[in-house]
Length: 315
Image (cartoon, rainbow, N blue to C red; front, side, top):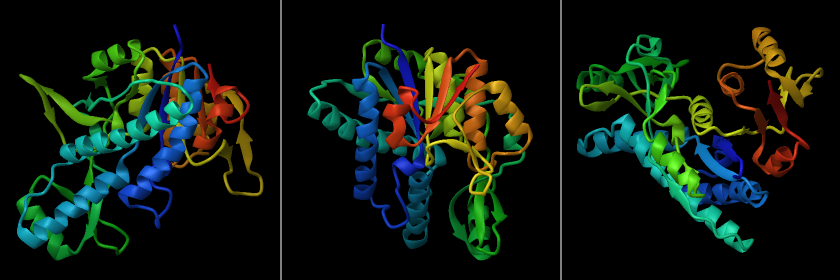
C-alpha cells in the first residue's frame, strides 16, 4: 500500500498578493501550486489536500454586508461561508490538478469533501473570541449590526473601525472521516477540511453549526492522525522555518526533533499569528503517532519529500 501524505496548503498558494485577488487570479495561483502537488503524486504517494480560506470567506462576508446595505438582504452565516469556500476552492484544485496530472500521463480521480469538524461548546474560545473576520465598520454601522445580531461581538481595531470577532476552538473530531478514509482507500486524491472545517457542536439530533474559525493547520494535523498518514506537510511562504527570522542572526531549521522544537516555542521564537500555529500543529501530529512533518514553500515540495530541503520534524 502506498503511503499517504497530507498537505496543508497555505493562503499564499491561493492569493499571491494584493494585486491578484480575482477568481481568475486565484485559479492561476492554484494551478501553479498544483504543479508541485502533482510531483508528490508522481513520486508514488497517496495525496490528501487541506487548504486555507480566510480571504475568500472575507470576500463573501464583504459582499454580504454590501448587499445588506444596498437591499436589506440577509447576512450570510459564517458556516455557509466556510462551506461555500470549501466547494469553490476544492473545485479549483480538482480542475487544475487533474489537468496537470493528465499532462504527465497520470489519470487519477479527485474529490472534494465538504467537511464538518466537531468542537467543544465549552471551549474557552467561545467566552473570549479573538479571531477577526470580515470588513471594518464605523461605530454607527457596528451598532446597527449589533441590534440585528445581538450575539455578535465586535472589537475596535487600531483606529481603522470595528470588526467582528469569533472563537477559534480546538478541533476534536472530523464528522466525514469515514467518507474521507474510504475515498483515500479507493486511491482518490481528496480535498478535505478546507479552512479548518465547518465548526459544529454535538446536539441531541446530530450537529449544530457554530460561528467560529478553526485553525487550518490544527485541523489538518488531526486529519493526518486519523487517516494514519505517515507524513504531514505544511505548505507556507518560506523554504525553511527560521529562528530570529529576518534578523542578522537568522538561523534556518533543517532537521530536528519535537523536544528541540518545543524548546524554541518556549523561548518565544515563533509569532502567534504566523508560524506558531504551524509549529503547534507539527508537534501535535508527531505526539499523536505521526512519523514526520515537513514545513516548506510549495515550490520546494518535490525536494522536501526527498529530504533535500525544508524543515523536517521527527520524534
